[in-house]
Length: 278
Ligand code: U2P
Image (cartoon, rainbow, N blue to C red):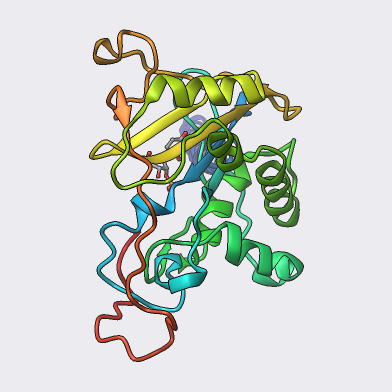
């Protein structure tokens, strides 16, 4: 009888030990699955190429520093510049911070001149990144969006060179200028006319965003093979249920860039604020 009880106790001990190790294994498995889920978001559906209009971006510049594109005086941008190439989903959402790939400026050293000119930041200070803490505007765009453009764009260099190539191939500023939409602080242009000019040139519908009636951003959209496609537009009754632009009225302005009065941004500027958030 005593030996029978001993066997029972031993069996229970083995059962307890087995259950404990099973639970431990399961816990590890769950943590790994969660980690995997963070790294592996569903593949994106299309590219949203976001361009910024400097005249609007620089209207409210209060802080200057060498890295702020608004503070370049006569060298400031006068054409649309790049905000980012964003892999998006058709349902209006987007993946972000997909692969743990820290931004490394050395990888794009040959592109830096072009990036300074065509992909400037319009803020002072650093911006949050997914993996490098605070960093450059480019670090933010690569880590948040670029890492999600896999498998079409596979590395940092390709992300920036592909985006620059798109920028040169689809020259939105030239199309608008040729259609008579020139930067002006007095004119208002029909939103429908601007959209039509882009549609005629690229055979796809862009999306515009405005700030206080001024064009702030213009987005072009592309299939994964970089053929133009329509952007996803939230239709609004104010715009005759036609051209979206969540934030644009029927008539919009394209403000002229106004220099912040600083020709040499490295000169003594009393209001440098390096940590202004994006
Ligand atoms: O539109 C406001 C901010 O939301 C982010 N955004 C918007 C649309 C989209 O398709 N993907 C996307 O990320 C942008 O954030 P950012 O890249 O500037 O961090 C945009 O500024």
